[in-house]
View 1: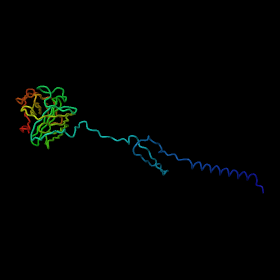
View 2: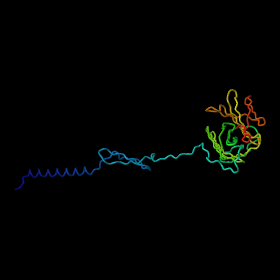
View 3: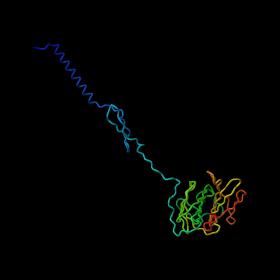
View 4: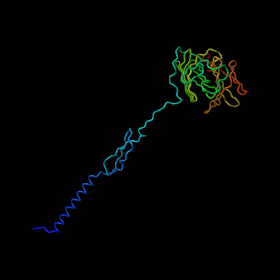
Length: 279
């Protein structure tokens, strides 16, 4: 029996529809879904960050870190630090002694009698005019550094085995001392000094101190007198306050131990490790 023309046409249309449906299904299943988290940042060293993908997907997306996440900070040395170990000094450790010298900078060794003649070394406030003095009496020590301008720091503490290391009020001193000399470093008011100070034997050279009321203001004076007559001194107004003011001290007469500050007589005391005066 020969099929009629309408039936053939219906079967052909059905077959074509099935073919189109199958092709559409295959094309949809082969296309990859678009991931909204697929954006990447420039590659850099370090850890990676993993973020969950949308809930409709079970995948995870890994993002490279930003450059800043891989950066590390390296601690830098403090600009106000000094070497933790003082220069070695040979000889025996004395029970008492006095030392003084001008200081130097840049690791150079300071001399015991540098500077010119007498008078105050107050001009300029550079390390060239600064000096340091140290007196040791038993296990106690007094040290002083000044430049006759803006620097004036006192140190008081104990010594052990020929070593002294004291810090406070923004200043630090560390030194080794023996019978012939003391050597070390000082940091004060942003200035770093190094020194090598010989033992003092003159009865008028050394460290002098005075505390007096000058026109209603408490002032602590300090002078360092070297064997060649060079001297430098600073005056600290309101020394017990949070903001003491340092200026140049008036010249000291070592023969009488006196000075004149604006008409006010200042009587100084020699701090001596040998005699114990001032301790």
